[in-house]
Length: 111
Image 1: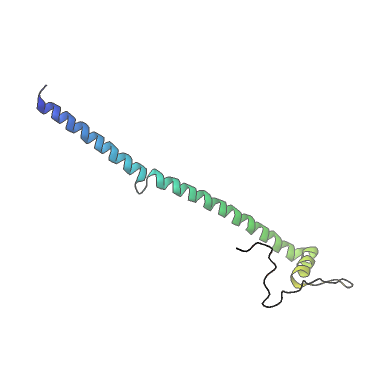
Image 2 (image 1 turned 180 degrees about the horizontal axis):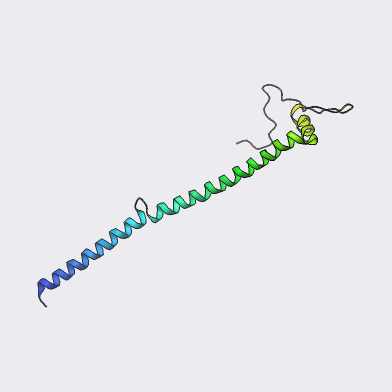
């Protein structure tokens, strides 16, 4: 074979290898590559979980509002908890507030 033909084959092979490697790097690490795709997918899943939690919380609040509009026991429960109301003959226990300047009652070790 001619030396010129061999040189052209080697150059063509090297060019194909370089092109293939650069294409692989672009597909893996480019602006829309696999690494970014996996990050976005993980972020999407986290946002879906947050959305589900927000919807469940919204449903609980909707049910609570509905109960406060129509259920006498729910109204009584809320009045007792939020306003400290009591029925005649009942006593409401209110825990004492901590003294000013006193450290909080925390039983954790200090370093």
